[in-house]
Amino acid sequence: MTAALTSCGSGSTSSDGRAAANDSTATPKSIVIYFFHAGENYAVGNITIGNTRHIADFIIQATGADRWEVEPERSYDLPLEQLTEVALEEQEQGIYPAYKGPLPDLRYRTTIYVGGPVWWGTYPQVLLGALRQCDLNGKTIIPFTTHEGSEFGRCVDDLNRMFPKATFKEGLAVYGHQAADACDDVEKWLRKIGEAE
Ligand SMILES: Cc1cc2nc3c(=O)[nH]c(=O)nc-3n(C[C@H](O)[C@H](O)[C@H](O)COP(=O)(O)O)c2cc1C
Image (cartoon, rainbow, N blue to C red; front, side, top):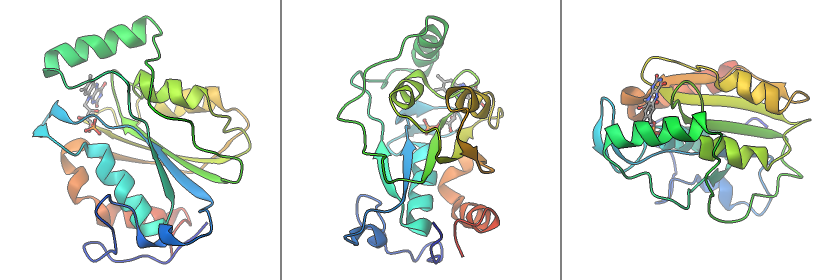
């Protein structure tokens, strides 16, 4: 799906970050599935809106895509040192923490943006766990990450392994501490991959 861009800073985003285009009665064909962690984080201090959420909002503003925010049942609002230990333990032990709410109906979605922070080289287990419950084979997947040096890490490889019959478009990896100011970069990328005009 392509959509006309609103310029960064003047988009018609409502208070929850959702674009006015989503008010249309038609279900958008694309959806952004993402996870972020608010709280103490690298290079940004204590934040209430996670870095990845900014990128998700910019994509939604530019494309009119719908959103599904993966909200964990458990809290990750921990001191950073503790959080890094918890995240590593989840990954090493193959724990997929529970998330809130039902899965989105993906039957009529053709394009799925998937985004999250890089935790220990790949997406957080709670996001991977939610994705494991979705069948994205046959869909177009557009990955994005925020990170502090790993770029995509193993995220794209992991998605490829999970959904071997999906089509992948070039993703976007943004430094977390630059995410809030990345609207122009997001729009440029969306135009490059043919998802915005
Ligand atoms: C538990 C944990 C592990 C992380 N591991 C990595 C990593 O392996 N590579 C990297 O570049 N950044 C890593 N980071 C930094 C985050 O990817 C980065 O701060 C990201 O923008 C956070 O996004 P969020 O605010 O949406 O959660 C890690 C951060 C946390 C909290």
